[in-house]
Amino acid sequence: MPDLPTYPGAEAPDREYHIDAGGLAIAVHEWGEATAPPLLLAHGGFDFARTYDVFAPKLAAAGWRVVSWDHRGHGDSQHAHLYSWDADLRDATAVFDHVAGRDAVAVVGHSKGGAMMVQLADAQPFRFKSLVNIDGIPAKRPIPDVAEHERTKMLIGELTGWLDHRRRTAGAQRKPGSIDDVARRRGRMNPRLPIEWLRYLVTVGAQETDEGWRWKLDPSMRFGGFGPWRPEWSLMRLAGLDAPFYGMLVGVQEEMGWGTRPGEVEPFMPRSGRLELLEDMGHFAHIEQPDEIAGRVLEFLGAPA
Picture (cartoon, one colour):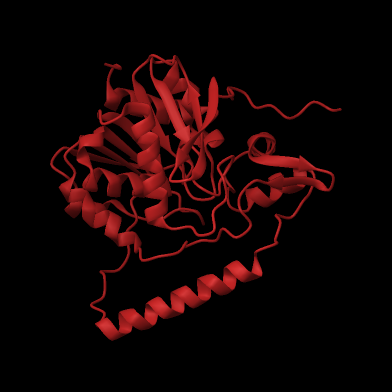
């Protein structure tokens, strides 16, 4: 059997296990000493915790117990009948409870994971010692004033569309292929990342079958999920955050990014907030430049307490 692709600096987690989140098995991955202070990492949509295989060890080397989890339907977590923003938040609180109980912890979120953590920090501030957000601050048009009867129509259409989609994808499977095939498909969403990284990612985020490699991501997963959520709602929650906040936006726009500019965020920044633009980096800055982003995060967090 040929050797699987490797990637410089990539390290498998030191510990991997599942926890129960309301009856669903959520996969948790940890780097660093089990007794070190915890630092939680929330990944983005269509990603999984092992996308931190280079970034997380750099944080662990600084003395943190780095913990990430696969969102439901992603990576090694269990697939669900329905997916929603609120369900992902409930799963996140189960991980927080398992790792730290009700103690405040340091948190880093990327993309969707960053937006989720902003909402959770606004709703349950006692959980957060500090929050770093890597290109996960959505901003769009102002929320329209929609009349109640229009909201009802939107809900009916959303429910019908989602149930039709679930029916169509009930027996679906991800398209198989060689490691190179699957890596090239991933490259359409990650155009700035090297093919060597994408090939490695296949070996930790896909599974090999008789027909080839298939991503573990639930085939029914699609952009947008289910349930009421608008990107700009996360932006408007920023102002109420109590924990020290560090937001990073990127200057190179990509398909998977939000396209948010500093001027859209600055009016909502919390008193303890810091915002920076990474002019020459793309949406996956922590993979493009892991040393640079890890250094910024560690400088902001300070030494593990």
